[in-house]
Length: 239
Length: 122
Image 1 (tube, helix red, strand yellow):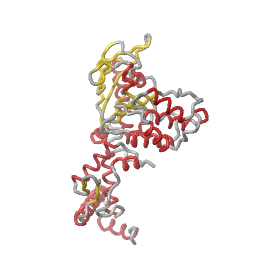
Image 2: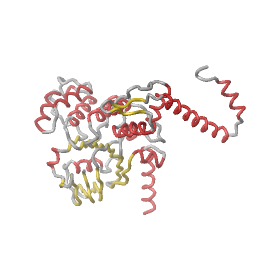
Image 3: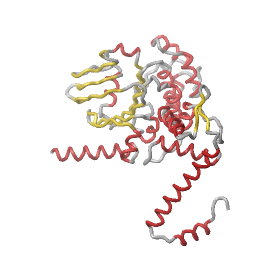
């Protein structure tokens, strides 16, 4: 289990995370939503051990999270930073040298499932196919946690659908957890067990999707909008 | 392609309705094997936990049964399916009649309207 307790993170004088406490249990698919700059990426990087908190504690199964957590957590950044002269096959070979848990058989299966040719050069791939390759190398790792920063951003509906299906097909929810930040909440909702909502560096809600629909009788998108309206009102009343 | 869900009802509930509809229409026959949880989840684009819940609830309702090592099957019990069909029909009519009364239509008016429109089978 990943646990963050009273995390504060500043970049210079800018507060990126403001007293965030959250537990991420195993075996769930969790959506991380909120406006640009609300702290989603920083939260994911915190869990991945890529940034350290100014105060508070971040632990994985009770041990403090450090950069070495990368051997158990697969993190996918929102940037696209592959060596462009590699072929897809060479990229898979490279990943296999970097991560002990990289499963080459699974990698090829995912690449094939997503209809990308192993012989293509990264630089000749369309943006959509680069998105497919990115998710393929991430899911090919036998990690406990997959942390995905904006896996759907800027991709067309066909690619988004492929990536969704790849996620369902190639993760095992008996033992693996997926946390992904996204703006496409309406589209992604069917993939999720839980939603975490961030605003201005704070975690403002963490709910099970079924509960939202059962209890409020609305979908996650409308629920999030109503949360934002409420926090707007609170802010104005607080003035 | 993934399917679209209504916004006001839990997704697992909508999937249960969908499978029950398939069974009542006969698209899924009595005794027929259902896809595996994972296969069905990928097909409709929902997460495997949700699909697991759908299968579990269908089994609790005795609409499907799990055979060890073989997967889930639609019940062989034709009476069960017929009973389910009748129950759904009752529910549908009850909701409909509630609306009819709420808007102040008379039964005669509605019956006439239904006859004029005809059904799918006519």
